[in-house]
Structures are given as C-alpha cells and as structure tokens.
Length: 191
Image (cartoon, rainbow, N blue to C red; front, side, top):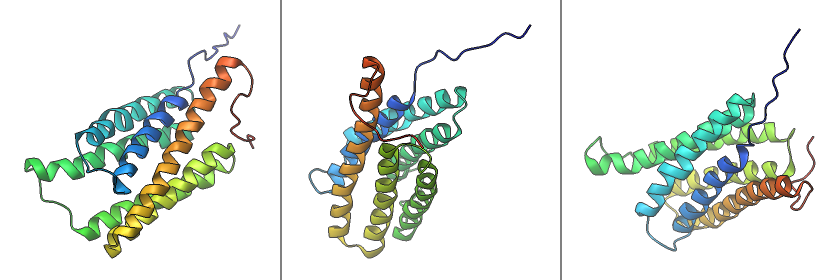
C-alpha cells in the first residue's frame, strides 16, 4: 500500500517577493536621486534581498517549483553579488569594475529576466508585470551606465520603484488571499 505525502508547508513566494520588492524600492529611491547609497541599502541587499530570497528559493525547490527556485535563488544571489561589487573594492578585495563591466553585468541580468518573463506568461498577471518591469529596469540601468546619462538612471530609478512596489503587491496579495480564503487583492488569472 502506497503512502501519500501531502505538502503542508507554507507558500514561500510572499517572502521572496517581499525581499525582492522592498530592497528594489529602496535601491531605486537612490537611483532616482533621493539619497546616497549607504549601509541601509547594502544591508537590505545582503539580508532581505539576498538571504531571504535564497531561503525562499530553497523552499520553492522543496515544493518542486523550478520557476520559483530559479527566480528567488538567482535574484538573492544577484543582491549578494551587487553588494560584493560595491563593497569588495572598498575593503581592498580587488579593484572597482570598469563601466563596461557593469553594463555587461546589468545587461546579462536583463537578458535573464526577459527569459524569465516569458515563463510568467503561463503564470499570473502580477508576476508578468513584476518580471516585465524588472527586465526594463535592468536594461535602463545598463543604458544609463553605458551612456553616462544620469537622467536615464533617474528614470530607471522611478521605474524600479514601480517594479519593487508591484512585487510587494504580489506578495501581500498572496498573503491576504490565503488568510481570508478568497480573493481580496487580485493577481490576475493563472494560465
């Protein structure tokens, strides 16, 4: 006689989306020109954007969700690598990157995100918006660095705030909908 094992663990997606969303909003308030890059953003990048998303990615792996595992683990490692790129030269662990290297870094993340966006076309509208706006954000940041045009970087900052807020909405909508057992905050149809 076979024993059926039911997964009764919590949905890790809201944790991952909140880690991504809040950290993205804060970094992009900086990119929009409102305050300098400081330890608040770096700490968020390490702990909430980085570690919390990696934990969510591992939890998604346990649930058998390849998309969630790939997305949360990758973006968690993005935040850790970004902090490393900013901090390592300051502590003598290598030299600062050439501008072209940062353009390539941001472009590659944009390309990865664009492909992940294609996967969201089988998911809900909220995730489609998050990934489409994130791909645009990476490409705008790469363009801003490539051209040295601070206006493009500021525009990217505003667009990044919208992207981050959309991830926060997607996270909190899932929490509210689960707690209330009905749709309180719509996320769009699942394909």
